[in-house]
Picture 1 (cartoon, helix red, strand yellow):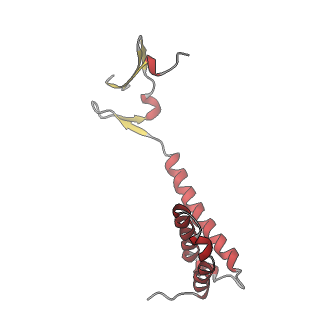
Picture 2 (cartoon, rainbow, N blue to C red; picture 1 turned 180 degrees about the vertical axis):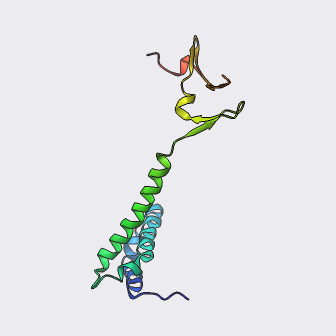
Picture 3 (cartoon, rainbow, N blue to C red; picture 1 turned 90 degrees about the vertical axis):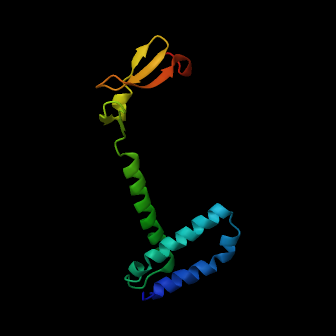
Length: 130
């Protein structure tokens, strides 16, 4: 059985204080607000380790920690090298390699750099000539 810290109880009470505010929000905002309070509860034990903790500061710091974790996860996914595998030869290359397509008279064909399999074709009427 998990022991509930005093600060966790205070965070819960803090959420109750904001019930009118929460109820006046739209559905998406209400869900976001509940999520923020959940973040504060997650780190309540850490906040209770501070001598004379200020409830608002503990709530805000807990939310910031969770948002920072989410930001780092999103950045990791965003900056992860994107790859594509050719269905014919099975070679996996960085996406940029696949977009070194050969220009032909009526458009651009994206070819596998190994087997020259046509992976994608863009007709010239879908882009402006440079």
